[in-house]
Image (cartoon, rainbow, N blue to C red; front, side, top):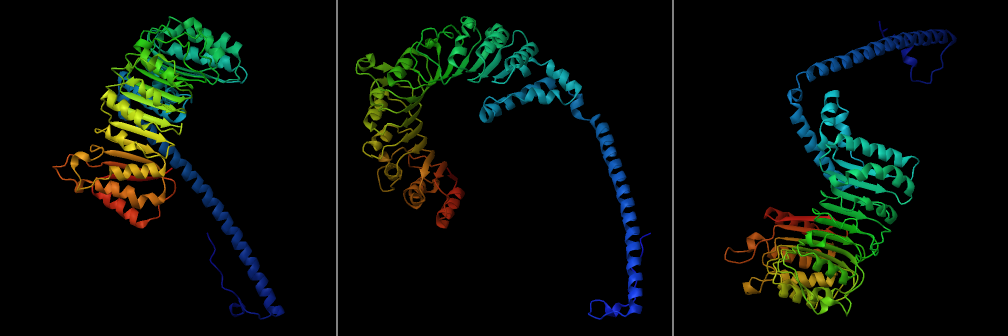
Length: 505
């Protein structure tokens, strides 16, 4: 029982400065003793109730587990055949792999282990699904016995794949990881499976890549290659491991040297990407040597086209190239003067040379008679002379991304802004649907940017005009926009059907 609160023997003295008499002191002390006794009784009752509550909570948790275990007996997934469960695992694994490629780079795969840890049946199904284990990623570090652990893991993964199934294979060896251990423990496990490699990624130093020489001629399934190395020497003729690969079409190379002496089945490649400080002359050589090329990227070109280059006299006419990306520290004028690409669809130029070459690009586009739909442009040049001629040569442009100096951007936007009183045939890029403007300053927003967007909104264009209304606008700002009038304008434009977004970069 919980005791009731007793009545005070001297209620009128509580909360006052009245000094109790000796007779009153005895009554007060007895009241205090009674209160302490009652507190002890209440503490005992609290302890009893807490013990009872803990017992009830434990029983509730047991009941929840009891219900869950019996509810699992009726779960629809238990009726799922092993074959369907296996397909579900494969589908989830492909999603996991895509997220790993985007967010985690070389991070160890989690998906096969996740499904294996759910229950015994799922583990058995996972182990009987070779496709679930066909994407092998190995990381060889400087830690002790790392090579032995990597070799054992590779052996387990290979054992779980079908002996004839193509595999995606990735190996990353830290620069300080032991070369003898890599050679003696890892290579004997992975090299015998080279004919099954379909997609290969190598993050290795030059000396470790050279140890892969036994796989030359044993790459019958290889379709794509990514090779990253900060110290790779590509100027030695020994580096010809991938020269014989009948199904190889996609190549990405990142290193510190050029492409000379790097033997590849050039004539069959359709997609190449080099981030290796090539010269523009070497870039032209690759385009010339790859007649079936559809997409190519050249990053960090550091040298130009030599005056004695064979391409200065013989124009390269490439019949299949559709996507071209060029990042260069030197003036690319000579590069574009040597090239003709009638099927070019997308062009991405990152100009770090601070040189004006607008006329060369214009002549290149007109000479090629290509239909450019997507144009991405980064430049350090502030000059506006000749810029508009470039865009006049792209009348079918639909997607534009611009990162340039303020004056150049302002000049471009003013020319892209439609004038209702002007001749429709004089409009610049009438099919433009999407535009992305980078590194905008807040003072640019109320002026040319908004005027440009407003002139191309759907309600301002009549059906008789040959102009396609804007659908998407992305404004990358250097700081947060505080202009209320601008934000209200954005809301109005969004209501009119333009997907306009402001992001802080």
